[in-house]
Length: 614
Ligand code: AGP
Image (tube, rainbow, N blue to C red; front, side, top):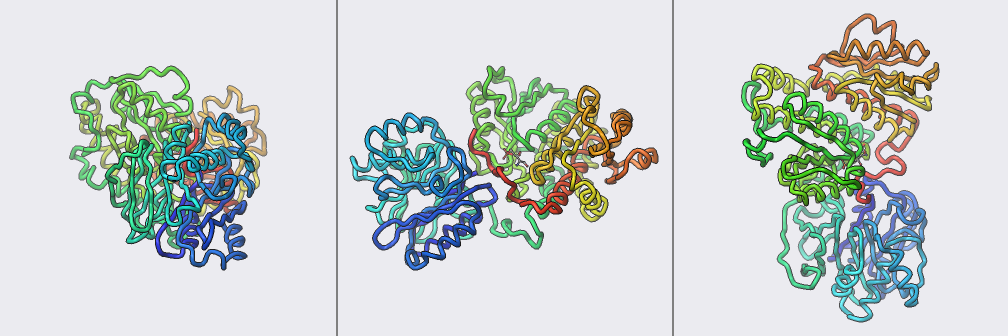
């Protein structure tokens, strides 16, 4: 979603801002802008579309900002008002003295706007952000203290925001604040950085401070002053950022998505390190802070997530119920938060999120926490807002994921669920030791199996070529791979814009079968196990309606050659782990189709990496 970068120090600011915004591009955006303190005043430059358009715009003005050492920048993902230059950030007050960038949504912006208009403010944009510029400017006119003005203004604002503010009167000062949206300060020597996410500043410093809600930071080249919303000074909590700059390179791959798909075997290995030493040894999951006694008595789990993380959660339900005998409900966070939810201190609530910042999941987690549930968070970002809400934090360590389409983080989430389920099964003694040993042995072989798929992509590329001109695509599966069908379909639609849907195969004849004809590709995820024969019959039914049948399978059954026009084969694997093996070809299929179609694979239209608004 939107991204913020800020700098105050001694270096030429423009390159730092534009480069920082480039590192946030993966979050998704449709316009960009910067404001820099020039000799006499703040200058603002904006453009719609990709950052290159902003770079071009800046070319015409180079002379104006060459010596500038302070500024703020923003990439905007439109929420209020179309992606136009006027709606792009930074926004200014009437006189242009105060400039602001904002992530999040101001919920009471209409009321504030009406009120400010009555007081003489003239609005140029349709954004919710512009009201904040006017509001802070008004407070500044009364107080002549920028930090105080920001504090007073935020007391009147409802909603989520990360704000970065500059004023012509304060030549070397940036003021930052936030509520329910991430913002951090990077600490250098004689310089400070502001950013909504680590990649924007990691090149420059690993020393940082995350702002907590309602804190206000005043940055000058010499120092940072941190206060609460009433102006009381607080000691900053400085930490070392975990990301290496190299994680942000494509490492020779054409797209981040392809690189991230190929990282999956190593991601699995990394997750196993320190947690699973040998098949006959117990799993070590010190991250789970529930006592063994509580775990033994636990009889209900709720899992909340969105998108790809929701699909991982659905597989988590299957595995936990199967091996631990605990009832698990899975729900989309956006549904969970707007109904009366039955949860309490006896329920374990698991939040799953790559970014750890997804607004709906964060709200759901806070609601469950307020009701006394133990909160376990599975996230790729141990530095995120969700992680800070966790009673138990299970970081998945997939490394930064840049491509908007989640791939390696999904694999990592599945691994977290496998480890959690097997760990709980050990504690509860709900599965025999012999079976657990077999499962742990298989778990350790998964990276090699995925490597085999990645080394052999011919059949996947062939399918991509054959089906890239299709308008619709159906994925079917049963049992533990039904969520794989959903995830395969999500990947395809996200990056190729083909209308793809995942169905439980048994549901085909209850409606979707009406859509089948000789133009419709149907991909069956036929992994060996308890539903194999059933799914084969469902595939026969689809074939009888002339659908273009494709199999993704680990079976060598010859019947398949007659039934399917294309077959993608994967290595043999225990049914319970088949989702991990089956998803990789589907990620690749989506990738190659999008590539053939010339789509913007890493930054698909309308999507954002981190969805920080409800
Ligand atoms: C995945 O490819 C998507 N971009 C999207 O569905 C994503 O999984 C969803 O927005 C949830 O994000 P989170 O895991 O960061 O919470």
